[in-house]
Length: 212
Image (cartoon, rainbow, N blue to C red; front, side, top):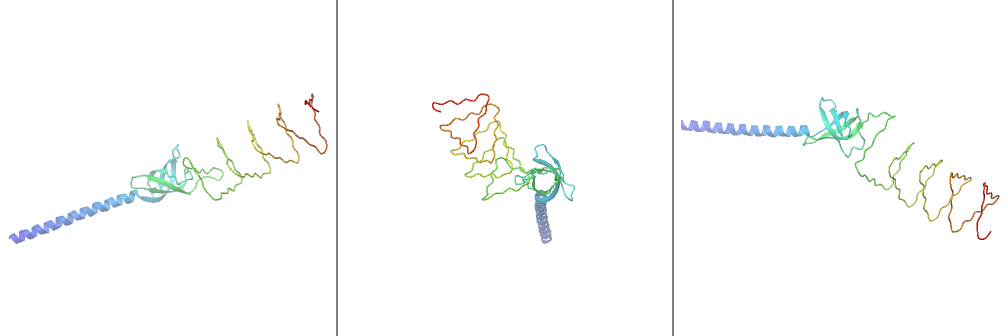
């Protein structure tokens, strides 16, 4: 009788141990599945864009799963409503838009590339080819050893225009300059030469000098 009780007790203990192991295994698998659900890579469609252009409401393609996502710094193109994007979720519950896969921007609209904060682009050689080029900036500074500009037409409009150079050379076929107020030239020596005709016209014409 004692042996039978010991055998039943041993079987009960083994069953309890096995049951505890199954519970631990179940909990572990459940935790792994929860992590896998949070850590995912998916394709989604942009539904809404926040005014700050950083937060987005998206819906995963093929699933009725709505998520709030943040644009990753590596995603340069600014997503718009209707774009198909690549998104990734992480263990902490955050979701990031990694790239724009299909753009919903019309051909007549602007595609915006947004660079984070202060950006430096480094390249051995950089070329930009476009039909139309426009640069808008509050302050523009160009530092270079050699600067060449080749254009059919050049127009400069400025409230103040200043040129400082050690040597300035200009060559024209025809030159016309219009000054609405006063044109003043101050120099140590002035030398004007003409191969044909030199003409000075004015209502009052004056030449002053110690020697003429």
